[in-house]
Image (tube, rainbow, N blue to C red; front, top):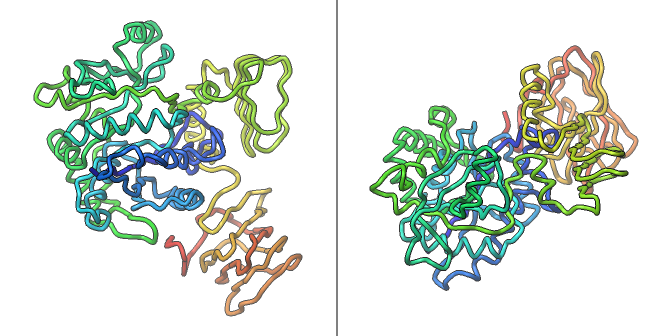
Length: 495
């Protein structure tokens, strides 16, 4: 048996604003340790091979992510030494079922399937916290056995409280041949309940939280999806077949994928296979209980819940002082943050926004994001510091007809050869060495040296050195938007 990890990294995490942004979502953040949630998802697989039979293999992971995040994802994988079989780019999110389908197609494609096998897909969202890795891995081994037999397996979290923010799974008849894991048929999926129903579910002992983690053979998924969602299969197949390699990524065809119906794994297939949803394949929809200190960190209150607390129940990160405060989450990224006499609050400070919300209403943070979108503000999209494949830039100041940025260029990195119709630029080197192309001239700048790029002049910035290049860029002109860039050459394949 071959296990193919498939990491779905397309979420936006709007309820974790202001740290999570559309172009820098929660799976790319280090919310519960030194590694980001994406990195932790992959590191969670370390040691799994040792638990398998000698003839079984854990393959290199497949990643499905939004094309806007591609360079961030690739860099985070590089940082932990992870070498994916492929990073598949979605031009737009279509929920989890199409993402899984792209992964299934990639897993069985000759380019990524040297073993010529029908692998068992281990489908993992990139934005979950699982604190007990050992329990998770043993559950995966049990799930792999069932998936290898043709079951469509999901993992149900053993509930620790009457939670209203999660969907539930009611367990049906136990799977006789696999009593070790407690695996059962899925009787039914249940939507997020109110507090009274949630308490009843937990008291009954029949219900588990729906984790969104799955195991299924690639061929079984495609077979069942074709039965229930043939239009989705067709759209994904066309999108994948018309796709092409783009540096480290596989870019599916945009027009074909945008024609794909949007649906979740649960709604598209799993709910139709439960005992109460169908009859012919009901026994194949299976849930394996998982008790591994899991959280999907769907809101700030969930992060407080899984984090280490002080004597007052406070969770603090950054330069924070809390006096006579209790059960509060305090995160400071850039400034000193102090709270006195507050209880059950969430206070998050970033470079361009501050959030203050009662923990009981943390789910409503998404309303702030909706407001930012409706009023065409940029704070839902980007942080003040913006990552680029060559490094990053940080907007320091701006006003009428000017903008100041702090730019960091990684060693050996190169910006595109470009020009601007509406702005001129002044560059001042603060640290490192810059190789500058300005028109026909190519020259070096070192610390405290500067240059001027006129409007309409072709130019390029490179870091030929071994340390990061840091410079201050002063833009001036009638229009300073990021879309005033005409690229002539680009190492990273951007238009």
